[in-house]
Length: 191
Image 1: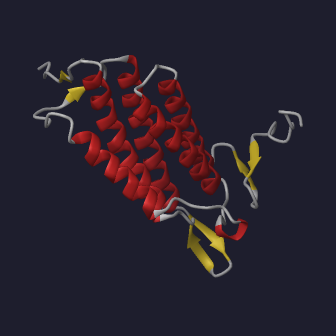
Image 2: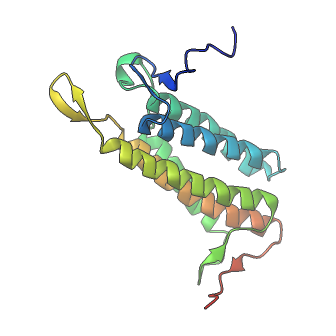
Image 3: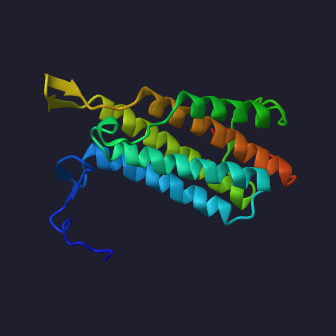
């Protein structure tokens, strides 16, 4: 199988089981940003994170790949594409609680940074937030459906998942710094 197909040379791409759309379509932006987030988590994994963190990251990478497939398919249920589940959201919440219990409570805002892995987790958090915003935008798009005008089908669990994942990435950045003996850097007003 060749990596290039030449079918996207005109600025369009095909959705799985759906029509061809422009490459700047909001659906493409959304799953492209999920893919970008996945890649940054791969970068974190190259930075020798603690084994517990690495195990979490590989789980997130697989789940994000599933989410990307869901977003690349206008009718995921019709094609048997599994969506994000409430159980996955609950697992994120459990991980937040478990890791946050090891941290000092925040008393002020902190700057992204610390160890390379923690800084990369902060970057992943911001990309996750962008993906979440794009899903909100996509969910507001109205398209012509079998029953007239309908909203783009976006799982509410997908939105919740990205919201919780970004929270967890923030906690994991702090946790990673703590494990390395690196303090959070407090934000200081410059004015």
